[in-house]
Image 1 (cartoon, rainbow, N blue to C red):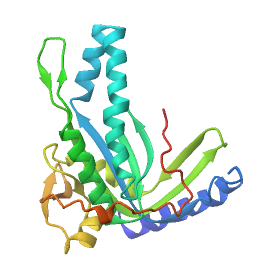
Image 2: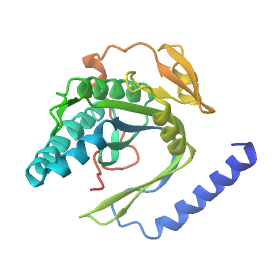
Image 3: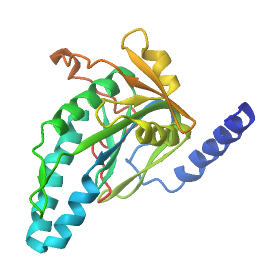
Amino acid sequence: MGAPELVRKYEQLSSEVSYLESFLPKGLGKPRIDTRAIWKSDIAGFTAATDDALKQGQLATDKWVRRIGEEIYGSFDLLMPYGGNIQYHEGDAGIAIFDDLEGAILGATAVKDAINKLKPVILSDKTEKQLKLRQGIATGKIFTAVVGDENRKIPVIDGQALEDSYEMETIADKDGIVCVDEETYYQLKDKYKFTRKEVKGKTGYELAERPVLTASKTNRTNNAAGLPKRNIIP
């Protein structure tokens, strides 16, 4: 995306701030545009496991749904101690926002560790399906807001970084930790080791070494936007 397109996009997002402010319920947080990191996830093997459970009937489906909530979404919650604001998850897809880039890397590592430790899914034909997590992180200016009322708060996110996080997730190695965009790479390359990769015209940087998750990193907070820590669209 060239400079003219970036300027146009920024002006468009700025106009959305003024527009949405008129609809924003009191106390739900003011819309903002600033530079943040977005985490995006997807789980290889999830669709096959879901289809298999549906074919087996209600009992198997209910058991799989419980596992999604307790194990998969429970794993996503590990982003929060590292400053992640979980904005969305549906099925195996998740989106979270970080103010701190290092927190995003550490949170992604914690989620990856948790998913890797899950027991395989036993399919109806008695074969095992090991769930594999792909994660992407992108950094850039994004628009965030919360609309709705006190009973249901719906996050609104827009910006190039959101689109880039989707791209990084699609080219991420399911056996790796996380793939980041160029902006995230340049801000963290002196602290972490990455491997550059190109897939179908898309360039990303795969985290090459697992970082150490120290206890001192678990008290991060980044709720400056006034967004709820866990605002899930069911």
